[in-house]
Image (cartoon, rainbow, N blue to C red; front, side):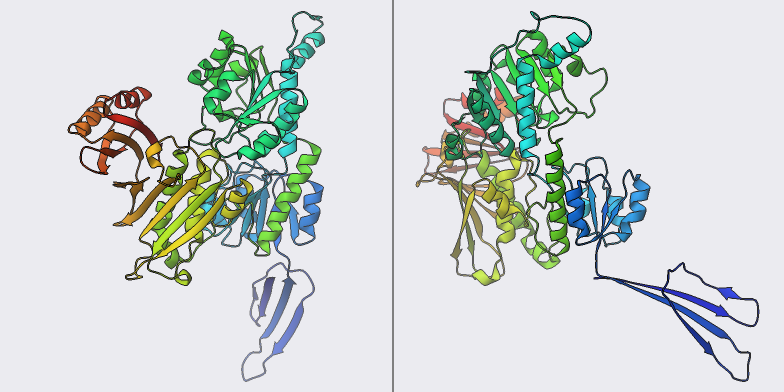
Amino acid sequence: MATAYSWNFMVTPTKPSLSWKLSIPSPFTAVNVTRRQNRTARRFVVFATVFHDPKPTVLVAERLGEAGLALLKSFANVDCSYNLNHEELCTKISLCDALIVRSGTKVTREVFERSGGRLKVVGRAGVGIDNVDLSAATEHGCLVVNAPTANTIAAAEHGIALLTAMARNIAQADASIKSGKWQRSKYVGVSLVGKTLAVMGFGKVGSEVARRAKGLGMHVIAHDPYAPADRARAIGVELVTFEEAISTADFISLHMPLTPATSKMFNDESFSQMKKGVRIVNVARGGVIDEEALVRALDSGTVAQAALDVFTEEPPPKDSKLVLHENVTVTPHLGASTTEAQEGVAIEVAEAIVGALKGQLAATAVNAPMLPAEILSELAPFVTLSEKLGRLAVQLVAGGSGVQSVKVTYASARGPDDLDTRLLRAMITKGLIEPISSVFINLVNADFCAKQRGLRITEERILLDGSPENPLEFIQVQIANVESRFSTAMSDSGEIKVEGRVKDGNAHLTKVGSFAVDVSMEGSLILCRQVDQPGMVGSVGSILGEENVNVNFMSVGRMAPRKQAVMTIGVDEEPSKEALKRIRDLPAVEEIVFLKL
């Protein structure tokens, strides 16, 4: 409930007047007080205005669909002020409870600071939140929500539109005939029927593209480490590895998020593995393609054509070789630009804003809620441990395996009522999903995001004897029904299993599969299964040293002397593929894997 009080005091003595005035609208109350004593009388006039408005105020800083505005107006006072510069936004924000932006407005730390704590929620009418300072929002207790689902169909349709336009040279032929030419033989296209389309990223948009491509008579394969195989089979799509997808496809359609793992994923090396004459569509994120490498691939004929809706820099430079290339079709980020999608985004973000202002948990929240300081302080090292165990476990899953069943075990001397594991479960979910997703996982949306991806997380507690002063003794994460890139990580019962604990305030990995280890979970790790024999530590260390890779720790866990052992190596830099191959080729080494934490 918003209540504002405005007072206007005017004091009129017998001498020249001195007054304080505030601009206030009617109605007002005037009170005259006259004191008659043995001194000069003074007249006090008090103007008091009381505004009582139960509605919050929502500032809409960029254009929003009418359906969304109508929903907002039914609950709040709505201020539609478009094209504000940064200073104007900072000036207005202290009067607002919520802010809605698209991609053109930068919501910086200064905006949150100038809000004076009144701003409760920022809504992004779209998916990406690069223009919102999430850290500052969280620090100031402000929820950030987006609208990730409303533009799914529009993006899928645009992907198919680019696919067909590219195959039949629509854009080039249109430009040619408008320039007065008639070049039928130059623009002979290719048919889609019977061709193989690789959908890279089988989420909402990717699966809708696959459905439509199947209707065009294409053979569709897909790569996505999280896509459930049964969901893919239901629409006639085969899940394959990344390498198989790019090497067998006639057409490749990109639908993965831009993350550190996917940045420039399509580069010189990737293009060299593709069939000569492959055609590429991108309606996802520009940064997943190394644009200079794509130009080289187009010039060499490795890539016959490309159709792009997104770019690393938007808008791209006017002299961009990629944009000007005769075999490239481009559109200015129109994936979500349909009337229906814009209305859907408006409704989705408006519903999230209204729900947040009502105090409801938002499924589309992209930043973590504020937590009591004492709880955060106690769980802080276990929060880090949980996320890193999730990241480690998912990287051990072999390509093409869909992660669906995860079991988390907590060992503690505390009873269930004294240990709230929701935050820890959320962080494990964060570690499992974020490395290959653009979704930001937090306590608010973790369970929703897991369910949305068909990821079932069960929890088990082991009650230990001892003092309950320490919240947890260890956390164990198991992933069932998958294959592993590092077979040693498989437990006797057939699950990928990793276990860790907090030592001296730091996260430590203590078990991989059945092997006990003891390494700090910092930087990156190399896991190496070997035959336990003298000289192995020196041999591996020498190879890494020759490659200028700094080793910060090394630990060996073994079942028995001269039997199998697992060497765990912490490194500050990512070793080259050649360095890993040299280690793998050592006679005593049975398998090796590199993991980023």
